[in-house]
Length: 250
Image (tube, rainbow, N blue to C red; front, side, top):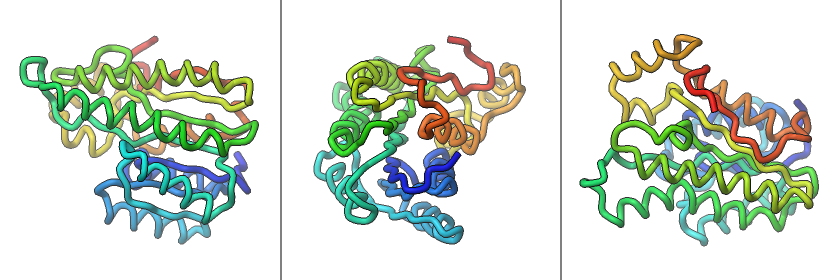
């Protein structure tokens, strides 16, 4: 898939799934501005790897729940690569912590929703005025948005379910402008997320329950994002694609 001449923004593009998406888009010829929050070392490594293969890439630190940081990312991409934004990939998000209903307070719940949903809203709103017909938005939701998530992940699951609904709504709203909006719902992918929040025994059991009998890897998610960002998926919009090795069928 050829993305030569395209300009892409990737939030959370420094590590794991985001890093592989950044590298896949650069490898296909796109110029990429990616955001990171606290992963400065990973951001530098991603930037260096992309530049080593001749990629046009720039990294910018920022909090995608803050309007001013979102605006800075968009303006940086425009200044570096030109005025139009052709591709937006919303990877930034997270669980923060596993908490039951009894353990959560309203501030925690709002923080999780902001991290996963508000960030997606803000970047979409900021980019769309600069997107021409044929542009694409790809959001990272989660299998948790379909099945409610694991123990202590209700806030995360709710926010990712909302990302799925926002994806459908934007597909309808932006379709007349020929801007496509899709999302992925990854299952158990081998990332820092699960290194932090999932026990080894749980990961092993989930992998064994998956028809493909393994966890996924970030590059496999990035391959699907690349397809959705490219013209190869020109009649695909409003879908939330299950990328879970067959663990859950929607």
